[in-house]
Image 1: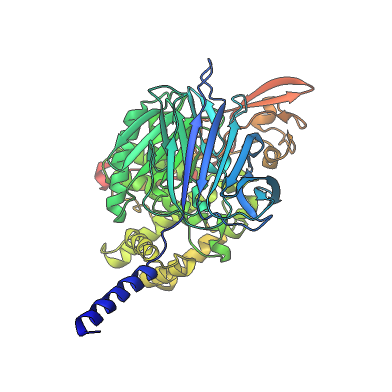
Image 2 (image 1 turned 45 degrees about the vertical axis):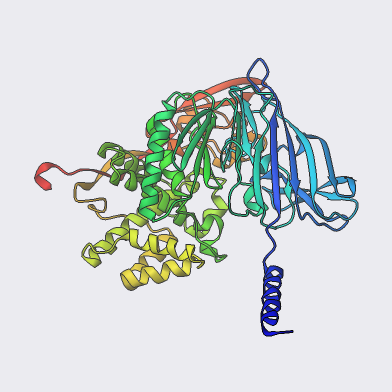
Length: 567
């Protein structure tokens, strides 16, 4: 073999070697959703799904697909699945379902095949939808229908691979039964869409779907869809949200290629929200205002950037870390829109004082952070503490950093540096926060942090929110439900621990009354004038107890504009 032939042979070998070394493309998952036509009341009562999954290898009896039977206390559509069929290259598969409780709030249901499965699996099934099923208080995962539209999170009705393999995903809509004007929207975007990045099945559970004739707003890198008829001008609110989302992207230095907002009605708990994959979903009621929705949007969109700490340490695990993610979100939900010129001074102060009023009148204000998780779902006063305490703590930290650095540094710098580290692959942990805090404020910063976690009342300086504002004390009444808050978490919900002389007792509530519907508690704590209409049943008779859930008057801190002479 001459020299030129040897070089050619060597080059061919290198090319073949390179071809052999090239990584295999990720497996794929195709999801096709085909809703039924709405009935005369505008209810879509069923939806057909087809999933085609490549590289779905599983041993006989191993989990192949799964869907929570309950997800964070929400009963899903796992029991409403009919006409389930599955095939692979060898033909039909026989699937059997098995439930595995994870904890009191979550139960997983896995479908297992009676033989080995390899290659591509196609699964088809139908989910029936009961429009009479009452809406949940929270979270809003469940599949619901109204106004010619259906919506829900994947973890309530979409079977997903039981493995952990990242897959290229494609979402398809078959809307032929809904008519020419129908649209399908998912967390990935409007219509048929295939994200560029492979996604793991656990993240796919947090994808939202909405189809039918929802309201729709679109802007570059942003979209919104809503089910039902809002009392506020939805398109205007969503346009405002798109501007704020763009400002967030500039402030934090990056933004996802696409971000979506989903909304639907829930008269029992308007204003609740859930974070999703590059999107979030929230609820509105018949009296929800544009201002309330803007505050909600400002908060929930922040979670696309600001979320909880990583790690498994006690103070940074689950609800124990809510002071960080939720506290920052509450702090920035008013600060950044104000800086962007998207809310006036009056709205900034109203939001700040709602938080401060709820915190400084909270009878559980001294609850240590270590006890938050245990009481989070049992007592609304404990549930709101991480939000209120955390936001005022961050205001205090910001004021301290600015004072120590002569205005050259602020909380913004720490947050952006932590988020940049997370994007580089570093774990954003409590250790990182302590290290940065010590670097900025020394031992005094660590001591203040430990005091906050221990339950010491947080009090930002009078000028913590700018020289234009000052801190004052005003008389406000404490939130007082009037009976043991744990009564609202039992099944059935039975009133116990009624406080003699409370507004609830004076309105006619009695121990032993059965509460028949859910009712909001978190948001009304910040509104001194919010009343409750408690629907109960007594001796088989339905009743409504109307009262103001307030008790003792205390002096609480609020902020106001400084008078002209003090500026």
